[in-house]
Length: 349
Image (cartoon, rainbow, N blue to C red):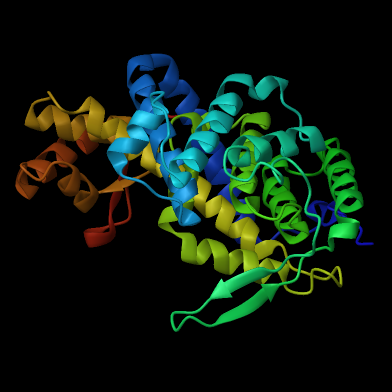
């Protein structure tokens, strides 16, 4: 049986991963500071995020309905179709995580509970139960042909594999030398390679990702849809999973492609938070105030073009005048020069 060993995360980590984790940690700190000041804005984002998460995670699997029906289901409407029943189940599981994450542990009962919630109304016999027959991770080509992308753990070995995976996760989580953020994608890769359920593994993996991020102090998933970002970039997401599953049975797979993909998605969540926040907070501001507010609210450096896209009714000349004024007043720092220049507020430490 495969051994789940995450001690490699204590060794030399590629520089791009170290850099991304540092950027994300800084963005997280800024998000927490901003959240204390603008609770109403964050509440608006929370309501939007759950709709996008429910829509995105199901859409990845081809489970869809209209946007208006998703909003209604999230608000409590009774599901009608097969797809709506599965969408409603995901909504319930996600709501449980958002409200009870501090009481939920990464354990078999929790994982099976998530699966039961998303499948109990459409696949009663298999809901919350590990697969009874061997399964394959299939890929469907545009011409209608299929190929086996990965052969998961056998049904006979599934329970023992899940037990070992969870024990290894807890061992790694208690190791102070392992960066928790890097442990999440490794756990998800192994979960997907075990593929413990006949169906619904992808959706359960995304629910687990949300719970794990909460567990390690990243509540960005409450305000920005992680699942929505996965759906938006699902081709690269699936490609990274495939790359990280090569030679998995031989215990020589490389987790790095999916670690990088995971961190990139998380970074996009913070970037999306920044953009959403600016959009909400700038609606009533005057032109110069709107430009200044974009710069003072940004949690990542922004370019002149970034600003212009946010306020298309404001001329480039006005934006340049405000930038020049703010640089002279020592409110912002100019990073780079010419067309590649970006601007960032000062006094962020």
